[in-house]
Image (cartoon, rainbow, N blue to C red; front, side, top):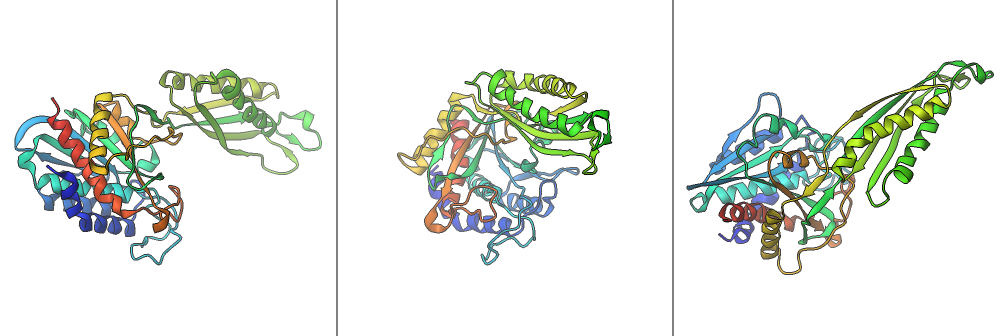
Length: 391
């Protein structure tokens, strides 16, 4: 089956869907209208649809003419709380303060295009293709709901991809090994003793202790961590104090950590706790630490699956389409699925300065070269077919 030719025949359909989703963005967990439109398109194509009473998103199931393995293709469907800068575009967001500024509208449209062309040729499919349209990827933890509901039961491989504004349109990256980092959060509460600002020696300054903790935490990166092990720790929020002339009794720090090494990641909470407690104690204060594990590192560990996707990309996009890309410190909760089934994740270039598609993800001017969308649909479909046919 020539998935590229078939996807190009659906170009207007795919771009039309992308523009509809772009014009009607919904935030994570609120994708009610988005889910309804996805389900409508899947059913129209002859794909079984499963929706859920307590979460948005849905799963489509396409059973081939012959038995075989099961492959799942995933797209995320949520938008961001961003006001779109250019409201003159015919497909600009109609929901003030909400925008598809990351490309999830593209992923949704591409996967619907793949579902339509595969459903039209189910007689050529040996096995089952499942289409997962996931809510709330930007929240970072919601993919777990689909695992908990058993959506990945019996899945032999899962494939995901992201349009990527750092790569030229029509190029593709899928490398072995770590591709995106974990994304965890910590909160540290510093407890001191209030006093008048004119007599600081009568209290224990929680703000001063918090500042010391911020500085001490950076030594985890520069002195405790192996320099060859990529590790980022950022304290992004610091709150404390009530008045300018009062020594603060309480302060709070909130931050994030990013890592690729799974074993090292497990040690981070204790490192933060011990460092914060010691730094706070030096100023007569105490520290309470809480740590939240978000998405794990995204690692393309299955070379056989990676090769299937790379061969498909070269065939669809042409020689030289495969390009290198540095691993990213941003996170992607697709990694949750990789713990439930063998998985892989690729990046489809969508940057084209001549068409005004050059802004980074999450910018209020973000847009894509829409000519890549049918190619992305073809990649989805081709990976599914090649995986199911692989011996």
